[in-house]
Amino acid sequence: MSATILLLVTMRIVEKSYELFQRAASERALVIERHLDIELTEVISDKYKRGHILGLVTAAYSFFVVSVAGLGLAIIPPDSGLTLWVWIVAGLAIASIVGISFRLGLRYPHGSNDWTIGPLAIRQEEKVQITVTNLAPARKHGSEKGNLKFGINDPVCHIEMEGGGHTSTIWAKTDISIPGQDSRTWLWPEEGKPAPGIYRFTPANRAMLRRKVIVKERSEKPEAEAASRTQ
Image (cartoon, rainbow, N blue to C red; front, side):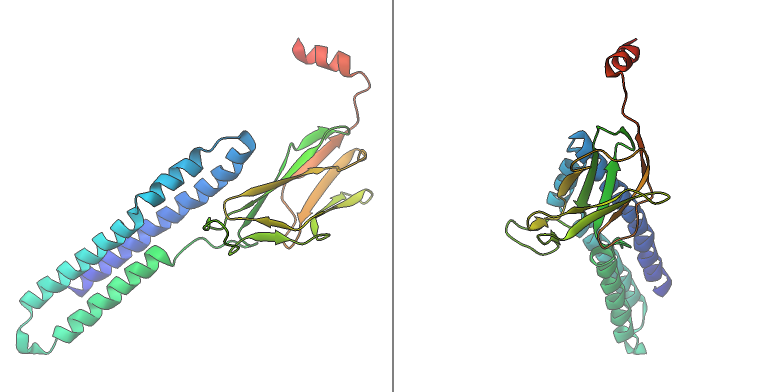
């Protein structure tokens, strides 16, 4: 009986690991879809939550544990003194399954926010989009819990050129509060034209982003370049 209950808990752990892998992939897809103006992942997530599938899965595993415990009680002699031990094991297993289902989640090394930049190659007159997405769960309207906040005049992102040279910082011009599952975008450069080169971006309160932006010299003959692209 103990081995069977342990097997059920182990199966729930393995299944949860696959769920977390899918969740990590879906959250990354959510960020990408924001750039493409697509809401596929959001719609799927909403339908999944409305179906209360997670509660049903937890209830099914708990039912299996209780069934195994009941089978054990039917086999164990009443005077063996093991009845209490059976219920203790079953209770611990059910508590473990509930904890795995509702308490075990993704851990974010830099907080529950995802930063993306693009395009990664621009000319001096073009702009780079700097987008932050709050991956925290969406809350009820009006709730501030889990919101990503920037106060007025707080630094948002620091940009520096590799090898030294041009540096700049994007500042929050107003108080900003980004709810869970929502995004905010800034444009760089805010004014002027950066020098040609390779730039690194460091958002506030997290490590430098892995991707770099290459700024090319401004085209002297944009009409000729456009005609060449058309051909």
